[in-house]
Amino acid sequence: MRFTDKKELVGGFIFNLVEMPDWDYLLVTNMHLDRKAGYLRAGIGTKIIDVAKDTFGCNVVFSEDDGSHLTGDGPVFAQSFQVNDSMAIEE
Image (cartoon, rainbow, N blue to C red):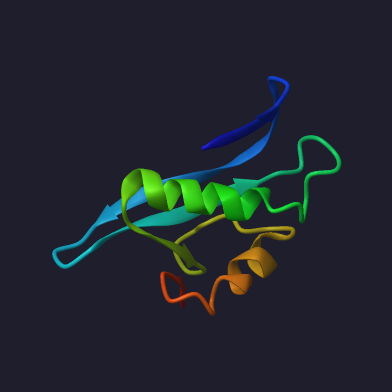
């Protein structure tokens, strides 16, 4: 999912849909919102997660052991969702 402002790319998230016998989930494999200054910590990442959940009808998962690229503010952002039952961080 990409986020743009006046048609200029700000960033986005890359998800992989993982289909399991009991449940499906979206695995965040890359996220960035720093292509244009002024957008970090503005609620855009949270909105992207909400739209992804609504669009695909499944939970969002962050993982540290699958080669996902969570750098910069990514790990802190992922940790902020750990308290939400609909999201998890796999270790």
